[in-house]
Image (cartoon, rainbow, N blue to C red):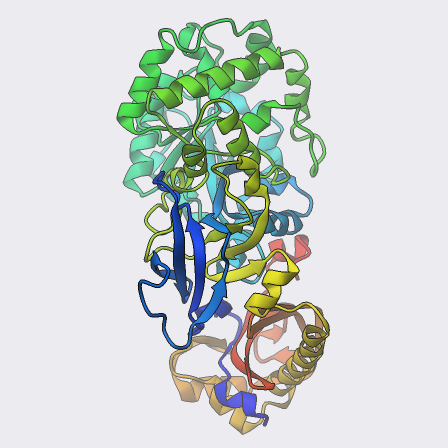
Length: 583
């Protein structure tokens, strides 16, 4: 067998791929940069940021400490660094090609997103692959949506739960006063959701019960500002962590609100002139209640700039666009801006979310905040540390601090002098992996895009094809000895096997005659490369039957002029992956 078998770790069917950057990666030091750390503190000039194994391992004035001898040093004099941006409000499954949109988001500096309502089957796959690094995307956190029975008339409840009865999907659920809340919230948590989103037709008393149970089970509670018929103050008093849509604070001053969202946007909202002063009572009391309770406000300016247009499943939001035509959107936007300014001045924590399918960069929200009175430092904090708090990941994300994840953005100019520099992206880092956005930085970090990479790609494809045939079809005794490592649990014929001799016996029962690899991609991260795609095997896996399609990934590291295999993994192509064209 080839040399790479000596380091081969094969996980048959069950073991997930391991992120390439989890190996002992080289230390990277970015020197002579100005740091905007995301906490709201003043910028720090002439600093050095050190990355080791996905983590910010040090941050200090350049020259104050000696760098480790093996460090790769990137001198970025004249550049500015801030935490990776977070979009606190997206709807990814409305987009027909979410992976393409996510890759563009990452390139724009967004390293994390919070999805506020969609098909959790798709979102769980995207979130998993984002964490494993098998697709270029921000990390993804998502919600499970709860609402009253009247909201079932909304077509989105069907689109997000296709194949299931509307209102009964664990991530898109009807709740009433008779609902077993511990059970349905446990099921929502089981989908992988980070938070519960409260949407429509929930009475104040039930809001409190849901919030208490969600918090007890370790989930965040994210709410529409008004959950008709409940007011914003009802959600705040219930303990909601985040209110979405500053414009949704408007109903606080009114009694006799509609019983649900759809009635509100089609009948009640068109009658409003938005002439109430967002600085007067009862709004001032609401802002102080939010500030005292630590409730975060997410304005979503971008959502009100134009009627919504579906880019994916036709018709799921058409009713929203039609309703918007009957509402004075200009007056509503002016009221939204005023309410956001008043809340900010009252000490309410502001978050930043676009309420888009990923087509609107979060920079647009930051720019609007600055345009209407929020300081550049606080606007940046809204899209970094405040958004991390909204999600519940502030201990590991959202600011540039030692021990936190190495998620950051390198800019060509000072965004505190001109907020538009947030769009001048030189480099994006997510989990310590560098994604250069121009050729000069690509050369600095060793991610060349020229002939050398093409040669490497051809060699890796050849090695990968040879590896697949060796492990699946040839399977000589040396190979089988190497794959049956004691610290791997593999599904072999006959059940889950942990004993090494039983694993070897099970693997020898394969009867594979050929293997085909399709959809192969090669991604480079400096001297580390990922090769991934679909594998189809001709033959049978006795006594289970024929093999189904598999996703495979192999991780390689360059040593001198050769590529050495580090890790290998296979996972089954589940039905949802096949529907998404992911296998």
